[in-house]
Amino acid sequence: MSESSLLPPAPVIYLVEPFGGSVRRQNPNMPHVFWDDAAVTRGDGIFETVLVRGGEAKNLDKHLDRFARSARLMGLPEPVREQWARATREAVADYCGERGGDAGDVEARCVWTFTRGRETTGVPTAWLTVRPIADEVLDQREHGVAAVTTPRGYSIDPDVPWLGVGAKTLNYALTMAALRWAKEQGADDVIYVEPDTGRVLEGATSSVLMVKKGGRLRTPAPGPGVLAGTTQAAIFEHAERLGWKCKAKNIYVGELFKAESVWLVSSTRIATRVKRLDGTKLAAPDNEAEIRQLIADAVA
Amino acid sequence: MSESSLLPPAPVIYLVEPFGGSVRRQNPNMPHVFWDDAAVTRGDGIFETVLVRGGEAKNLDKHLDRFARSARLMGLPEPVREQWARATREAVADYCGERGGDAGDVEARCVWTFTRGRETTGVPTAWLTVRPIADEVLDQREHGVAAVTTPRGYSIDPDVPWLGVGAKTLNYALTMAALRWAKEQGADDVIYVEPDTGRVLEGATSSVLMVKKGGRLRTPAPGPGVLAGTTQAAIFEHAERLGWKCKAKNIYVGELFKAESVWLVSSTRIATRVKRLDGTKLAAPDNEAEIRQLIADAVA
Image (cartoon, each protein chain N blue to C red):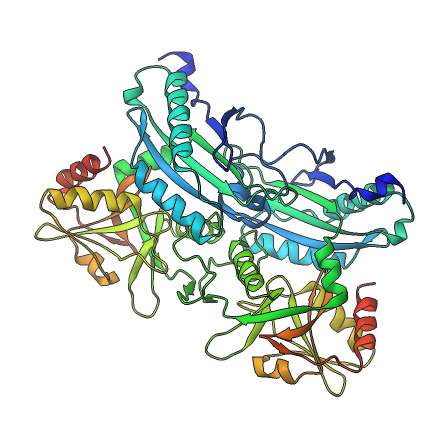
């Protein structure tokens, strides 16, 4: 192993002109966000996290779709689709090239950020980063997680016109607090459930996927409290082609204990099996290898 | 009027070492927040907005108390009280000195920010800014506002252990969306009310203060959905000394229409009278000058 391979690869950052102009490389050792940016002062912006694998960004169209939807819901200018695709391609090529070795082996996490911008200029701020996937994420992908259920702590009223339900915003302080709390309980992740009904919503940063007998896949239907998942959508599309019966419908927490297997799916972690829920061990399914292959192929 | 007085005064920024070390001046024309700061990626941090007047930060102890409480609730290190007080004094002195003229005439807005810091270092990021108060704020202080009531869009469950109810975090994307919506309705601000009960919570960035006949002041009691207000507390303390009867208790939206006057109070806007609520004109009270004086003296 060469000495340089002991260091994590340097992040690649591209600043993106918000209205479709140029993109340019930014030195990751220099800050570029101003103290009066709405992202900093208000968490007022949107993001997407995209898996990079085999030299390319995966599931790109679904991420571009959701990015545009988030922008619309938050009253931000529409991100210029072609520009983000191009900036992503360039950044991924830089990252793979600079990392050395075969680009086909590279895995990374690409994050797009689009904020309402500086108070003093009113121009949105936009950039993307390409970075290594955290060891913890790779570890969870392989070894699964212990999860605890919890109410979200707030219930969302879908009739409020300005709420932007379904937007993927930067307001994750509560999510981070939930994850810290889970770790204090000795767990790795949370699964949000509706307090009165026990209806399953989603993981802290993932969609819940349940495998049932008879080749059935289930996920909670997107809506208030359930963000539409890009990885979940890719898995369903692929699985349906292979003859799985896939449905987005209500799941109640008791069903998770009776399922063949329960997974948390998201872009860079891809899928992690829930091995323990609220302290109870969930048995390993007979078809774990098949499910892993199904999911791997869906995001390939 | 000299030419320089036509330009808004330059902001004064101090970076603050999070564990009580040194403070240093930061060039406001240079960004200092990194792309992997938790404030940027997650809105994961806390803040306080402090009024600067007559060469000093007002209501300092109450802001320091709430800042410390927010940090505790969010699992952040305790801000070093003396350090923030000193950094504020130095920054305010710089700002007043550089603005020229008599420091006694200067009004400004000082914002403290404390974030969970960079993902790559785990060290919190902390800084403060001193800047002019926006013209819109000064205008509302003088001329009042039209407000619209709206449900908050989410209800908060105080029993969820990790929610950090009462912390003043950077997660204001929904607040900003509510204000944009208010402006689309031709109003200036919102007053959040509980949908089923009509119980009044707070303004978007202010406490609600209601003046009733017989020298009575009312404000909604702090709790889930109602942040304890530093300005409201200062007003109550001062008014009680003058013989006003002050109570923090439930207010229902119908009472606002029958009150002598309704005010939104916050640090830099201080107080703005609600002149129109949901399109209905609220009559000017006979004692408006007295109330204004009461509030002015309370934050003097």
